[in-house]
Image (tube, rainbow, N blue to C red; front, side, top):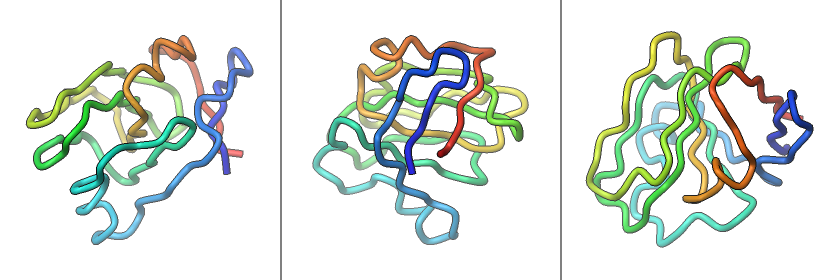
Length: 113
């Protein structure tokens, strides 16, 4: 499955990893060395994230039920807590720089295809 910006047609990630169970959501990207280009982690349900015990920065896209972007955070550095955006029901964690490269902004809609 890949992640696409429905407004621009731009591919945001070529491969989506899912974190829908309690254990997978709890683990997330913790203790990983890096998130390869083209990969992302979709965490659902989820309202916010943290980067404690991580070794690298990530970009975070916050989505509502309709997969509309309600918030973005670029370069969330290790050891930090992400923001909370009203309406968030899931988040997508991406390699740092992905949001800027794909021009993903609040109000756009993404598709998992």
